[in-house]
Image: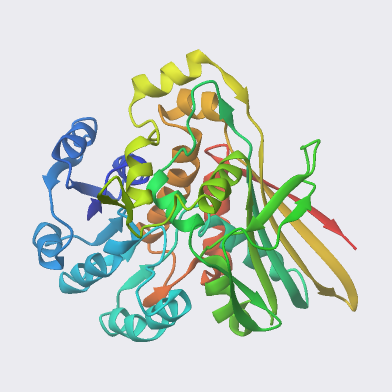
Length: 404
């Protein structure tokens, strides 16, 4: 029987905790957050959980509450990842998060640091750490590896996320707007001709057609983990892929691009009527937050859904038996009303949280036997199969299209 710490019990962390509460191999769950009310509200609904308030800015605070835990599942923003990993090492616990850290040394350099120095730290203690275990990164990486294994060599990998969801209530982002807009304002990364390339935000626009969507969608490059980790692992697990990109599109991207061009995503203070104000800080004071509680979500559903469409496509191109082939994998997720009916959460929280929860149970069951730090595209075939089979139980399924 395992004891686990879930730190950061917002939408994703709470889904992990709920999932683990039903797992026969879990005896105790510590639900930790800086927001005590949030932790207590969650733990009060779970039979195996207790609530703890914690300041995660210091690793020793995390280590204190994690003593005796077998695993730490990190649902905090990525700037806390290093502190939580330090705590996991201190108490000899396995570790999982939803996105890798982006330290001042740079995004690519941060992952290189994880895959070398931090990998050895966990490996030396015989501990497993999985980094980037949500939808994207996470499920996207598993789907890429699944497709790549079906070809003899891989030339191109593309990950495309179109979110066309609109409700009568103005909800620009269904997760943290601070994280969303911070990502969109950051320089983009792609792997091109075997080299990492950075570019300006919203670069390389491209009109794309997706299965099930009548119109073409404008997609732009977006800062994300996948081109970084896959570029670093191209030769070892992705059969030499030389071009890897991540593109994003939809109303929220168009909104963010306009805000960026207006300078409202800048964190540099400007003088306004004698006061220094950072445009980004002002925007965060004004922008509607994503709904968190059941009554809020129900009210939004009752007010009405205007448009419920989207696409999550993983595409690879390669060579099979001497002939070129393209494999497209489309993931199907429950919409807002269905996700709320199933779990009392939004579609965004449901899809990301369930992916993270399945990765967490895979760790609890000890299916991946390696020690060290790994990303999902490094998982072996049985683990990838487990992830896909378990997600299907939550109505998260994949349709594959193969064309010459």
